[in-house]
Amino acid sequence: MASKAYYSIHPKFHAAVDCIIFGFEEGELSLLLLQRNFEPAKGEWSLAGGFVEDGENLDDAARRVVADLTGLDDLYMRQVHTYGDVERDPGERVLSTAYYALVNIKKYDRELVRAHNAFWVRLPEIPHLIFDHDRMVDDALRFMQYQASVKPVGINLLPEEFTLTQLQTLYEAILGERIDKRNFRKRIAGMDYIEKTGGIDKTLSRKGAALYRFNRDKYDGNFKI
Amino acid sequence: MASKAYYSIHPKFHAAVDCIIFGFEEGELSLLLLQRNFEPAKGEWSLAGGFVEDGENLDDAARRVVADLTGLDDLYMRQVHTYGDVERDPGERVLSTAYYALVNIKKYDRELVRAHNAFWVRLPEIPHLIFDHDRMVDDALRFMQYQASVKPVGINLLPEEFTLTQLQTLYEAILGERIDKRNFRKRIAGMDYIEKTGGIDKTLSRKGAALYRFNRDKYDGNFKI
DNA sequence: ATGAAAAGTGTTGTATTTACACCATCAATT
DNA sequence: AATTGATGGTGTAAATACAACACTTTTCAT
Figure 1 (cartoon, helix red, strand yellow):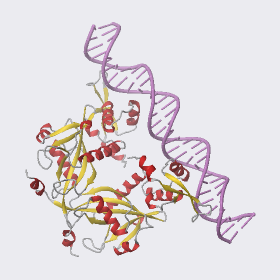
Figure 2 (cartoon, chains in turn green, purple, cyan, yellow):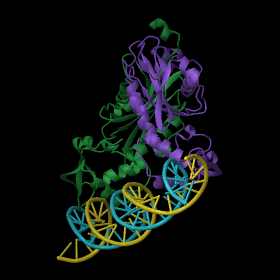
Figure 3 (cartoon, protein in one colour):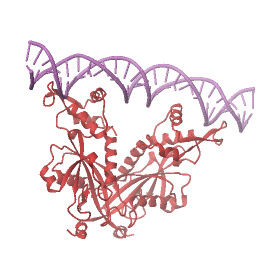
Figure 4 (cartoon, chains in turn cyan, green, blue, brown):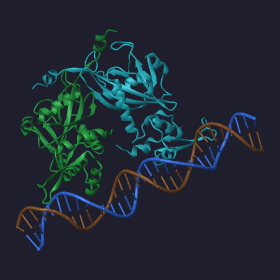
């Protein structure tokens, strides 16, 4: 059988990536959503998505979509699932791979976001989204929560140096539940890759809070899952 | 912007599914591999794969690939990851979604398997596979092991009624490690959805071993992750 | 009767996880 | 100078989960 024929008898499809972009602010997670100003589904809310282009692999496509929208490229990004229902996009058949990203909401480019008709929406206030994007968000959130329980997902949402209270607030936002302060700090103390910098943050308390940083070199040793 | 144009300026790609089909026999897991008798990579070993067709969603495509090869359609199957590197298939660009499946090796159709030039290979003896299939197997195995630690993956590899020794042997094969018999049975005893049938199996021991079955109704209540 | 082969059964120690409440610090205010 | 308020920081005890470990029971075949 000739090589060309082997491929050509099969159909081709558009390939998309849809990105569940989480940001963190004031103790709450937000999701970056776009109000579409183009068809199909003009006027409705959707995730940040885009088509995979020639010469670009899936992960790169996802990074490009997030970078185009936020100006950020130093982010934690992970593939969640690929959605392939025949009717999922009513326009044409599109297979879409979902990625979730965690971005530092302090660093993103507000102008870029505005120019794309995009908005940060707090998790509890997320509207209905087009196509199967609601399900994508559900899946991504569950996946991220699982990952956060097993590795230090989300530290890039914090400033370079952060207090333990900030870290705890972040984890409470990600996991969607309160955590006991003493137990949390005990657990962190056992992670040698989260280390005291010696600095003190006085912006939030009179007493001042010790600053910590994430040490990637120490972490990469302890690889888990 | 016209709807047609919105899609048509973007490229299309072949979409494939590759299936990591695990079978279980004599206390060991095997993987169903094909020796390709067609180009590209004729003569080399590969996973069972196929192209997604029009009108067929991803999960269905994976089920079809496994059914075509084994004759089995009652199986546990789960999407693992989508591989999208530009050069992953040297022939043309193909995005491939990996699924893993667990099949009852007692039930599969040997003729179908033989007709496809396919072979069961024990896990430790897996040869080098084409493209990125080695990585797919690694990922699928890790994923399956994680899942097996948290839900009753693989019970469909056993007969309808099974002994606890059979179940333990299965889990040892999946997890790749020995399990203490007493601890294992304690854990199973805590799962109300694995219930004694009252039957006794005498084929393997003089004393006879109690038979159990998986109760799906009871399980679907205890949904976890 | 006895030997072989698999089934079945409890306890103890260790590690992990959870629950829980008070004192320390320091700037701003009085 | 004393008080207040807001946040940072700390330890212990109970409960639970997990890991290690060895012997007895049954019954068929000899």
